[in-house]
Length: 126
Image (cartoon, one colour):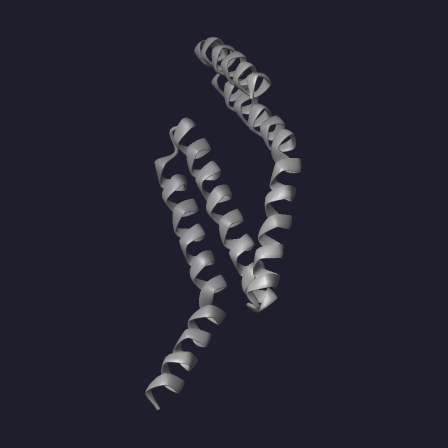
């Protein structure tokens, strides 16, 4: 955690200084720092996915639902990251488009779950 905090502080300070002179390079620096963070956290993400997979297999739920859940979490994080970069660049219209794309992606991804839910409700009712 100390390494991550130090990297964050250094990246922010460098971006702050660089933004005064070269705004595009400051944005690229921010993107590079985020990529480094992603590489640093990948092993922990794998541990979380393994533990969640065990929970899903023990519960007897369909493995497809676990895949949908993982994809949904990934879409939300990537959408938020894209929106933050667009806001940093001052592109609010693109930020809104990224947000809309993320929402539509989540809806289309969750349609199989909605259909199972409707079938379950219909079985209980009828």
